[in-house]
Each structure stands twice: as structure tokens, then as C-alpha cells.
Image (cartoon, rainbow, N blue to C red; front, side, top):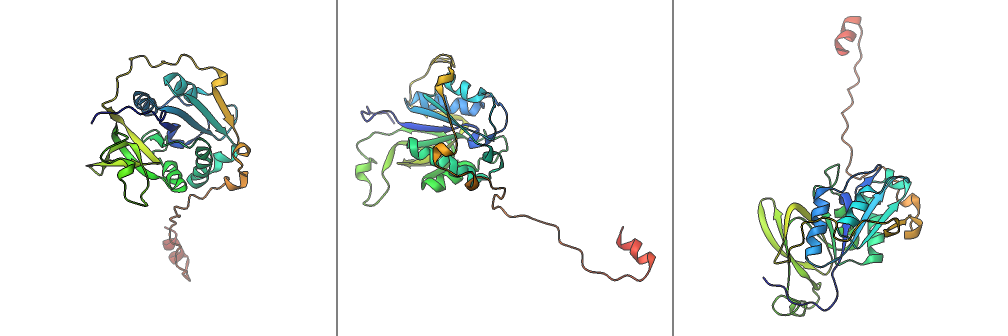
Length: 259
């Protein structure tokens, strides 16, 4: 599939660093996050990188490396309640920021979450009412006009975006035309089919400066800390069953029960 000229401006992409996991210390840019940045730069997108922090004073290592890797803007949301938030509280913060940026695609690296869960992107997609597409291995730009264009969509259907994604679904490859808003997880070996190749260097925009990073708080997003400070991820708790009540009449039987 070949790309057609698009005069509507660059696609707006938000990259959730570390799959929107809350950082409590300086971390390097995950290789998959760096790969996703390169992927979208091949497609000519405008990229903003978002990093969440549960404490102030954390060195901006990953976000600085993201700027050097090619993102256009970088945002750090710093709030101590995030250090105690579950995926639902964290997803609320991410959603609130994304509504100010209004990206067409929210991207993340599938394996970039240090805990291996990548659950916040799913919560974010639910809150945004967006499609959730994990396991992306290929993305291609679609023609804006012609077969499969938004004008051909059935009445009442969500408008399609300019991209088609191939995603791994339990070993089966599914090709999906992204709707107008989608949260997409990319594997480390994903490719941009038909896109131009980039130079090998990883610092195409030059070194990052302190002014390149925007710091935001919950109050900047209009959120109260009490909405975020939750320790229950709503997954439920599995506890051992209690022992039945037993009456004993001798030391020997008591010793047997306690073994």
C-alpha cells in the first residue's frame, strides 16, 4: 500500500513512556519506547511524550532521551498521590492530559512497563472511549480518499483514521483500520510499512534543553489528589480460608492441631 499526500497537517501522537507506569526514580528510555518514537517519526507525526512521576526531584533521564530521540514536546506530570494510585487513578490523570492535547493515536511500548502489566493504557482507552489495540507489529498510512476512506464509512460509524495496523492476536495476525482515536501498543520489532527510512543517528533534533520539558501537577489538570490516591486496583484479593473452630480436651490433641 502506498501513501498519498496528506495536507491536513501531521498526525498528533501521544507516547506514554514506560506504558504510563509511575516512576519513582530516574529510568533510562526503554528501547521499545525509543523504537516507537522512530516509528512515528518515519510517518511524519507530531509526537508528545508523557511521563508520570510519583515524587519530585527525579532526574529527567527518560524524558530527555525521548527528546533527543525525536519527540516534539515532552511533558512530566509530577504528583505524590500518583505514587499510591492504582491503574484506574493513573488512567484518570493520563486521560485528563490527553484531552488537552487531543491526539489521533496514543502509543505505548507493550513491554516498556517495568511491572509487565501495561494496564494503564487499557484504562486510558476505556476512559477516552477509544479503541484499544495492543500487540501492533506493523502500521501503514492509508490513502485519505478512495476505498476505505471516512467518506465510505456507514452512517453513524466512527470516522477512520489514516492508519491501518497489523496486530498479533494470540498468534493470529489481524489487520485493523484504526478509528479516529485509538490507543495502540507496539512490539519492539514493529515496522512502518512503506515509510521513509531515517538516518541511523538517534539524536536528530539535537540535545534537549531544560525549557523543552513541561512540568504539570494535578492542579494544572483540574484534579483533586483525593481522586488519585487509591490503593485498590479493583482486581480483588485472594485470601486463605480460615481454619474451622475445633474444641480440644488434651495436650496431645492440641499439639497435633498445631503441627
